[in-house]
Amino acid sequence: MRGLIGDKHPSVNLPPLILPESERKPGTDNSAGEVNSAFATEDGTLKVGRDFNKRKFDPIANSKFMDDRAWKSVTEFAKRVVTGLSCLTELCNNSDTNNSGITLDPPLACDGEGVDPSGVFLKTKKPEKTKRFAYRFSVSYFGPGFTGWAWQENDIKWLQDDIDVGETNNSNDSNNPSTRKDSRNDGSSSADLTNDSSDSEKQWRVGEYSVVAAVQNALTPLLNNGSKNSRPVYSAGRTDKGVHGVAQTVSFVSIDDLNENDLGFEKSVKKLIETSPAGKLGHLKVCDSPPPRLAHPKFHATFCATWRRYVYVFPIRQSLLEERTPVAKINVPLLNAMLNNLVSEKNTNGEKNVSGVDCYAFARDTIDGKDSFVKFKKARAFVGKVPKVKSEDVDTAYVDSDETTEEPVVVIELVANRFLRKLCRVLVATATREAATGAAPDVLLALAATRERSATASPAPPQGLFFAGVGYGDHPEFDLKE
Image: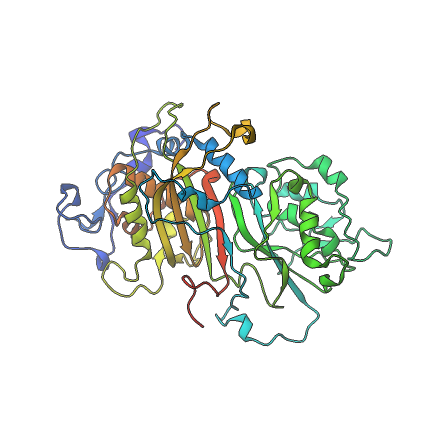
């Protein structure tokens, strides 16, 4: 498809997409405006240019529509959020955005123990007698400083030379070094928390290594606890390259009680991360709340989570510095209505929605046959502003002009039990495209029903996305009562 652009690209010449008969609504062609539903068409199909992607943005036009904007102010804001100088809640602290009464919760990693694979709350289960200790803490990280959360090939080269890459059933990623030979043969114990990172600092290059590699390397004095096996580090969500993490929960297990060292586990973790190469740059930080602690022996940051939360910050102002950038105004109330429909307790036929929304069309690179249903707990959009930054505090690499002003943005908040690969960014890009071109409020549900990925947009830029929270069974709004 290389070289095919504009009206010649296959994505704007899709055949009519057949809607499931069970979800069609009586009505006429919604392009006439008589029935404001993407499911109410005379022929029972969705057509590009009529029901969705009404301006027929090809992938290049769609990418430029998202990319060619005032992103630098958002990136600078993200850097301040990670270091604790700003907070996502400040996006609502503006009196001139006509958002009276709209609030945004701060990033939150709930402190519950979560659930086991059968859905039983861990805190109701008596811990088994075992020498296994599980530990948890939360981190914030600056997206452009890393290649994403997951292990990459470069990580192995950066870490110690004596890493043995072997297969393991405990790893989330095939590239994760599962075992590490204990390089300390001087009889030192886990109480020695000297993080001698001089060699790694020389090799550390911003944006070339993963978050998990940075975390695991920083925690080497804790993980190499007399055993020759390294302890894999798990997270609540595996973020892509450029995506920021705020209140990302991390867990690992150990055969040692790490609270027995001189500093205790909480102070040890904070010190080791702070003195790591990424920590010194302000790209990686341990969150104060909830504090690092010993968890239930069966606690796992990934599998015990009950929901995840993402916030996307999208500049309204178009820079128009590139050719072929479509000029269009985003209808934020329509965007909000489209997202709200994802949370409905009932499906399009009025029946109880138990499984959630089939998000196959909005996912990318998923395994064939994998369950693609997502249960949204919150999905909304509103207008906010990136707060003003004092000129002396501004990193000149991330500003749009010499004068820093409040930048109008669209804030999109998504909370769900799970998120598929690239789901957030594809959903944001598709919803924004449809809200800018006047589609029906239920168009996202209609596109989901077709399961056609070519009908959805390419992923939105990663620098606008924040992993902003995770639940472990104890949230008053998003978790069911025990």
